[in-house]
Image (cartoon, rainbow, N blue to C red; front, top):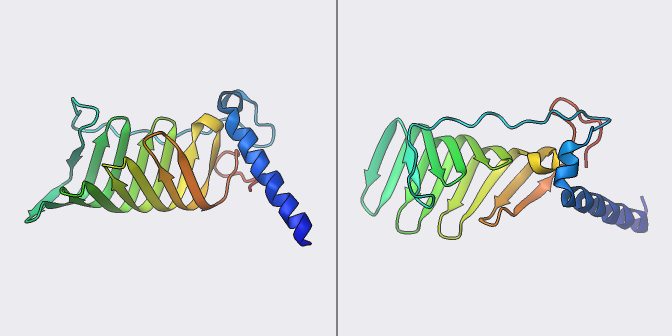
Length: 178
């Protein structure tokens, strides 16, 4: 493929993604002729706790180990909740002084209209960012899903995916994919 054609294809692809992203309500309501319109998030877990302060971070797990220096480790059925964001994983390490959380193993992340399944994630509570690695994602607002090497979610609900593919097809169908 010529360099000019490759450049044109990249620009066209970016324009298509931008266009689809601008009209989430139209996309969610549209009959996705090639792919169907039944994209759904996996059900959110019902957590055993309910934080009274939306900025409070609540964590639980089957086994807890608190170490000197404000490092806490949780394992087994780990659950984290802060505001509308929920996370489940197998293992968690929390650094209280830096307000950092690292999770590994069967990571599932939910926020309003967003779901990401990953093997590991890093949460910076001060910066209000979540980084998820090697993941599958679903964004209901624009009826899209895909796989990404990395997804970064900010407090402003800005989501950036890197080394990713993208489709509006339902799971099990990739009639088209970028």
